[in-house]
Length: 215
Image (cartoon, rainbow, N blue to C red; front, side, top):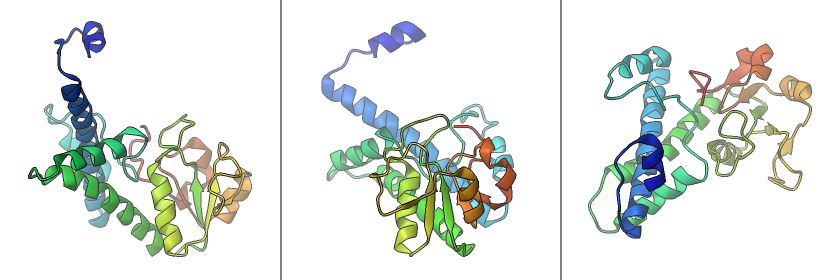
């Protein structure tokens, strides 16, 4: 915290290790809440056939909200947000809370909404393009799309994954297609957490909630 303060010219805070841990958990939970909020906004807009782009831009004109960290996704993921939100909820114990639990629950609800939307299109083969959470990332640990895949598998969906960084022994029960051209041709519907220019030629069969095409 002191180093961050020195670089950004903000107030230096001296606190106990327990307070520092609480700060980290609450900070990441707030970020998760922001992700969950815009994801639920997107679910509402998609269900009511509204333009999510317009609604988010309108909401974010309010300077108290700001035009940042507002791009919808399949859910928050990665190493920190899922772990820290659940840890904070656990730490509450018997302390009354509604919001913290709702943030954790909202992430599952979003993934279920995504899965239901995919299944409504009745694709014979669901192609999953990349497992990473962000553009130009090589890390897909705890990526939200992994939960989407698992939930689709529970519904007996036929899934094919294109992920150049995926070792053969990882996710052994999922079919892989390493040839991008073949992957595009085989997939009736392609889902991706973040849109990529390599999908431009098949955009009509891509399902992604990457409204602003940025992380």
